[in-house]
Amino acid sequence: MQLSEETHPKDHNFHEKVLQFGTGVLLRGLCDYLIDKANKKGMFRGSIVVVKSMGTNISDFTEQNNQYTVCTRGVVNGDPVKENTIVSSISRVLTAQNDWEAILETAKNPDMQVVVSNTTEVGLQFFNEDPNVEGAPSSFPGKLTAWLKVRFEAGLPGVVIIPTELLVDNGQVLKDLILRQIDEQGLDKDFRAWVENENKFCSSLVDRIVPGKPAGEELQSLYKEIGYEDKLLIKAEAYRLWAIEGDDKVRDILSFVDADKGVVIDKDIKQYRELKLRVLNAPHTLMSGLSFLAGFETVKEALNDELMEKFITILMLTELAPALPSFIDQKVAQRYGREIIDRFRNPFLDHKWHSITFQYTMKLKMRAVPLLMSYYDTFGTVPHYFSRGVAAYLLFMKAVKEKDGKYYGELNGEEYVINDDQAAWYYEMWQKHDVKELTKAALSNEDFWEIDLTHLEGFEESVATHLSNMMSIGVKAVASALNVFA
Image (cartoon, rainbow, N blue to C red; front, side, top):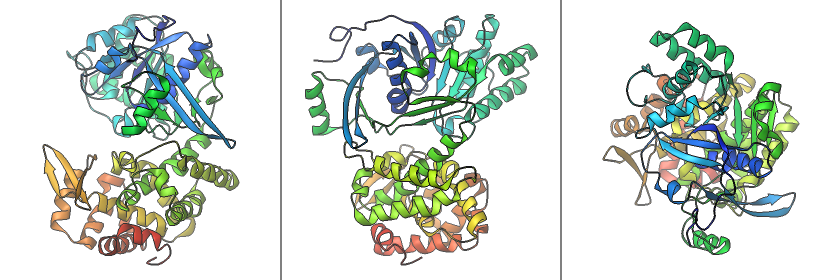
């Protein structure tokens, strides 16, 4: 039996209140899940129009009447949590390529109150695009500018805009991109004033590990447990947090806030943001290539290895946490770090290291490099666990093959895809340079990091040494050696 309108009819037909850019598992497993929970409690009573920016295949959504199952698995206060929820908060899924006029039409809907996005860090970049041309602009800020222009011309009030991309002050970043788009295109000054003053751009932070859809025997076991098949099923940990920076007006509009303690609206979310970005995401990123190349497929597998657990713990608690901004109490950081280690160890989730390497370079730049700079400011010396993570990144980016525009590395005779915008650069550089030359070229590339990392005393040498050792004795041996080779 397949999940569908016939087998599981929706018990509501709410007005469309939310426009969402992105169909990814994090949005579906957190934001859409939380709005669905509020709807079921009668607290928000609004549905979501989802925009799929890449590709045109939305058959999995339409066949299931835009419903899907979130299988929550984890441990809370020592007790196992097991919950299966059919999320029915999405009303429609539209594609930017085929349905752009229908997407713009939603701007004329007076019930629309909220715009949510998760286009990854790469999505919040500027492209000078005319919002008046036929068809969808290529960039997310371009699309949102066009949508807001239609809403302004319809004489409707502004909306609450909540980007969830993992960038510091993502609300302000997105607002600046929209205003720059308006200025570059010479658009109406009244429209600019309306965007700036009548819309609320709220920085936000999302925190939930959502590995996505399981496979093989585990998936079949879940189908048997829930009693139907679901092409969009996803697993998620029990922990959840959506911290939104906003005032009382924002709180009134986001009436789903009180449906779950995981939703927080605060005038300042800096502490939430820095803890998650630096203590969860930075080690996740630094460990992804290293753990994958060391032979661990999932996060929990690495945490079940005594030496790898020690490596992650030292990296997180002795190098990254002490480099956090001074407004974060170290006791809070250490406690949060130990909670993160428990979350990484979640026995119910199979979070694959390879999936975390998506846009590896950008993630290192945004999540980890600021901590590296702070560590040098504080201690003036090389963080050797950090440098091993960077060495493993360089090795992971060693593409040995290009096919149909995709680049592949090799591990134990098996190919793996390198999903990174800089893969072509590394493919060419690895063919031309030895380890020391490659390390210098990569670390000094300011297009990657916006700074020359070879200026950090001893860092280039440390990364090159660890990289050379990884290539000669293996990644796991270098990680397991802990202080040897430091």
